[in-house]
Length: 185
Image 1 (cartoon, rainbow, N blue to C red):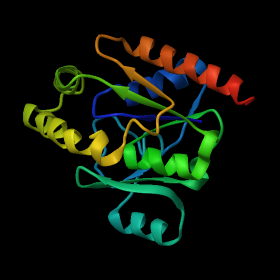
Image 2 (image 1 turned 120 degrees about the vertical axis):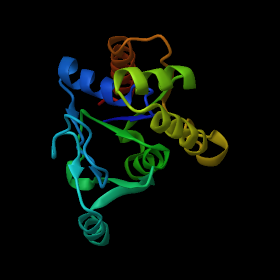
Image 3 (image 1 turned 90 degrees about the vertical axis):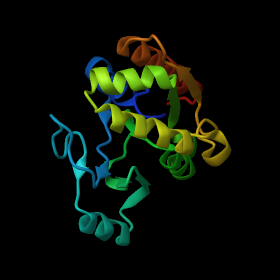
Image 4 (image 1 turned 180 degrees about the horizontal axis):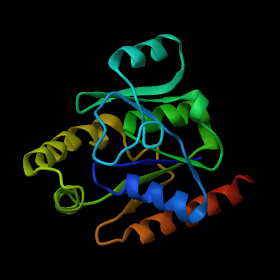
């Protein structure tokens, strides 16, 4: 199982899509209370839940991990996990995965400069300038190694400035294959 973590617009989602399309990995569909973005489909991109539905699942111990990020709740249900799957999570989620799954997960921290990430948010995702700048500001807090140890849980750290999605995915996949061989998986 591949766990991708990193700040907003570091390439997690697009890398995960490429890994699924080109290498046959399956997506761990996670849950969120945020509103769908343009083109996102319920139970494909996320399980879009109300806060009440999320709270009920949490009370029933259905989640491996939950986190709040940018005012929205996110979580992964145990029922959605499995081998040769890929998931994108925030640092707290990556730590929860590591604690629950140990060496049955391969974690990659994708990083990029603030300038690259800001450009990706505005030019590719069509986020507004103010919203993109706010995400950058919040990521400074969330991804500070001093606070969350975001990189400490990763098996591999990749800096993706100037990389295409194809290169990101290939680097992740090759590292994953090496990790699988090392762990006899």
